[in-house]
Amino acid sequence: MQVFNNMSFSQPHLFCFGLGYSATVLAENLKQKGWQVSGTHRPGDDPQPDTFAFDRNLPLVDFDDIFKDVTHVLISIPPDAAGCPVLDIHGEDLARHAAHIVWISYLSTVGVYGNTDGKPVMETSRLLPTQERSRFRGLAETRWQNFAARTQLALFVWRLAGIYGPGRSPFNKIRAGRAQCIDKPDHFFSRIHVDDIANILETSMAQLNAHGVYNVCDDEPALPSDVIAYACEVLGEPVPDKVPFADAFNAMSPMAQSFWADNRLIVNDKIKDKLGVVLKYPDYKSGLTAILKAEKS
Image (cartoon, rainbow, N blue to C red; front, side):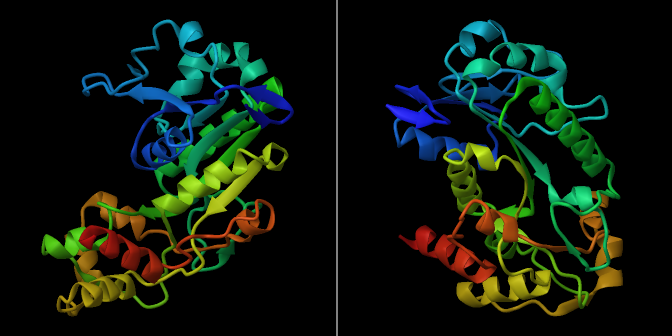
């Protein structure tokens, strides 16, 4: 028997709208602790056990049956120009089940802050997104906050920095021969290991009264060129020569260019001060070292 916010459940049940990289790590961690986990997959994808096809044009079939014992909800499906598909399609369905949902989390992005020319941003900072996808996220955040206020749900909004981890790290680019050391001094990026994301979300499940908005990143913003250089060193590969930013930028895809449009310093004090989080990988060096060690084991 587990207790959340004075409510007890013989088996807590997490439902994930979207089972991508971060959600899957959290789901696997909770399964090992006896949780029931279910979620959605894209129409056309091979279904996994306890997953259901869903998108804006394909609502969940038998929503009430699927959600009859759901206690925790994670939304990681990105919004589109029309809004958040989960709220648009199933908002009222979720509201109908609010009495037994004790925790709901929305994965957003630090992109909602836009560009501050390297100045710090905290959860109370103004949202001035420069990218359309980040503007959609900011609008979705507001809608979820309004929904939570109306339904009395404990909502956590997580503004995630760049995510890395096993299978998604600089090692992949280096091994593929695509790594670059782009020379742009004073343009730092924040990142977060996927294991820390899962740990932070799980930690919040025991602190429902701490619901709110949180920046999620490690303690050491870094130049991308420094991260690539360290990854090369631990792999025993030569460090690429530095490429002037202007030259590299002209060769980038529009998506890659958009990541360099914003320069901000993400402050992560709140996850530590309010949730008591201790990061497993407080900097990129510890995270990359652990990834490589796991690959070799």
